[in-house]
Each structure stands twice: as structure tokens, then as C-alpha cells.
Length: 363
Image (cartoon, rainbow, N blue to C red; front, side):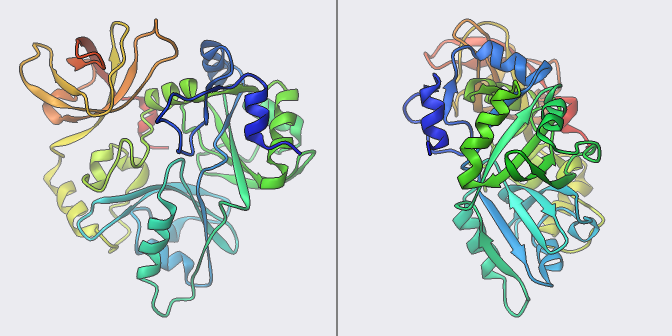
């Protein structure tokens, strides 16, 4: 049986540029036409390979209380069949991971499009003393695909997935389908309706082929990163790091509870909330002319004189398209519709406009 990677490259997947591999986001740049892939992922249905995304299971009777004490979300109020975003933080409130937490009757599952799995496991294991909690990596056993687009629900229904109950972010179910048993979770991480599909790794390539036969279009990293940046979706290790406190990720309403009580890092996060603002936050920038900035590129004010921040990631569908980027910006430059100057890869500058999507608000 062919692996998913062999199928992708056999059907015209264009590899990522050198130095951009090694992440759990799509391993190919595109499948021939990134513009059409982007369109499918918005108005149609596109399937993205995120099969290397880390996946950790927490089991044991103390799993809920334990995770509740070490992340920013209110895990005690998360019923089976639902999920939420959360940050793992250290004692200073600094970011260690950006997670999607899913609850079942007997487990909690931690997934992320980009996560240092070993570091997360080591961090949590460090605080296990007498609690009845078992931490298990499931990454080698379970692979994941991501469906995006207005027609994604229709494709899943053809597959045999009851999507009716999956109306809210994080809701998930098990389904016995023609591709085998799947876990399907509503996420909308890229903006349009989206579903994260988890399946036993031996069935992953077959699921990819079945989805294609149901008119889900294979899509690569160009469309994926353009969509996620437009949706304000950061990746830990790229857009987020341990140098940032949780609120600087600009997902406070989605990932941080201020009513749950104590947890590791809660005091500095609550103190910053009491101040009413951060000094800097993640924002999106739409370039107004073609060009591509690189991570670390300087962002300045409209006149080019005052330092505004730095680019963390950028994407475009082709060389003729203006790029979109995520950047950490000082507050006074981060108001949507503000104009800025962005340094491009060749050292020139391009005008850009700050944005922050509605999708970054509450679920």
C-alpha cells in the first residue's frame, strides 16, 4: 500500500522550498494550481494533509483536574463530545504550546498543527506526582487530514459522517464510514467551515483517495498558510514562542478563561488583564503590492521611520499576488486599517495594511 506522501507526489504535489519541511502542516506547496486550491478551500471542499500533527492522549480519573491546573482553558466545564482552544503556560504566563483540547468519556486529547510533542509531554510529566493520569503519544498510531470549505459538510455526509450535531467549534464524534472508523471534529481553524479528521494510520492513504473521489480537492501549503494567516491562526514555534505572554497571541476570548481559578501562569496573565492591554499583539498585514517578507523582517510605520514590530510568517498563492503576513506589532500600530511599511526578502519595502479577522473573536 502506498503511503500518503507517495500518493501526493505521484499526483503532482510540488515539494516545499528547501528549509520549509519538517512541520506538520501540508508537506507540498501545491498540486498544480494554488489559486484553485484556495477557492476550493473556501467555496468548495479542499483536503489538506496534516498527517504528522502531534496527538497526545490523557487518560486516568484525574485527567480533567490535572490539565485544568496547567492550561488557560476551563477544562472542568468541557463536556464529552466538545473541545476548545487552550495555551500551556509556564509560571510566568509565557507560552509553551497552543492546543486544541477534545474531551471524550474516558480521555482528553491534545492536538496541534505544530507542537514540540516531547517538550509538552516532559512539561506535563514534570508535575505528575500522585495523580491518576497517563500521558500517551498517539502520533505514530493516528493520522489527521483537514477538510475546509463551504461544501465540506456535504462531502462528509457522502462519506457517512453525521455532521448535523457538529455545529459548534470543538464538537466531535466517532463515525463508522466507508473509509473505516473516523473521529471528526468541527474546527473552522482556517476561516471557512472546517473539520479535522483522525484515522488509524494504515487507513490514512485510503481516506485521502476516498475524499478525492467525493470531490474534495487536494490542497497544499500555499493555500493552507494563506488561509490560516487570513484567519489569524498562529503556529507555535513560528508565530508564537516562550518569549510571549498568553494575551499577546490575540486569542484571549477563545483560549483563556478568567473565571476558572488558579493554574500555572494564572497570576501574571490575570495581572495583565487587569491592566487592560498588552504592549504588543499578533496582527495580520495585507501587502498592497506583490512581494514576500520573511520571518523576522522589520515592520515600520507608514512613514518608514518608527519601528512597529516584526513579521512572524507570510504566504502568497503565487509570485504575482500580494502576500499576507502575521506580525507581532506594538499596540499603537496594530489598529485594523493602519498602514505600515514592510521589509521584503530582497531588502526593499512594500506598503501594507493591518487587519485582524472576525474569526479571531469568540467561537
